[in-house]
Amino acid sequence: MLKEFKNFILRGNVLDLAVGVIIGAAFTALVKSLVDNLINPLIGLFVQNSALAHLYFTVGKAKFTYGSFINDLINFVITAFVVFLMIKAINKLFPKKEDTAAVIESEELETLREIRDLLKK
Image (cartoon, rainbow, N blue to C red):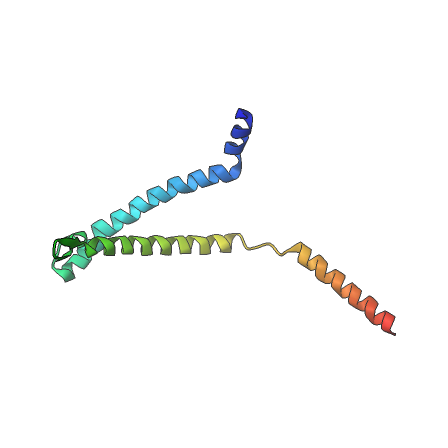
């Protein structure tokens, strides 16, 4: 059982996934720093507040921190856009291979059509 577990862990997919999670966590920290240290001060110039995350409003005793939500939304959009660019670049580097089964199938289909046409004559 231990040998099977070792084989499972050492398979390429599990290692690739682990590397992806680690790089993703580091990238998330980088995007958070970008938003907190560069984008928030720019937005703060317009909303007269030094930190976007501190914006809130209250209704009764409830405190709604919409600034934190806007921070998280900016983080998400930047992260999603960078992932989109990475996937687009990867797709250019590694184009999809033509499906050889489809080519063979279309050749067989054409041969069968020719046989059909010959039999009709």
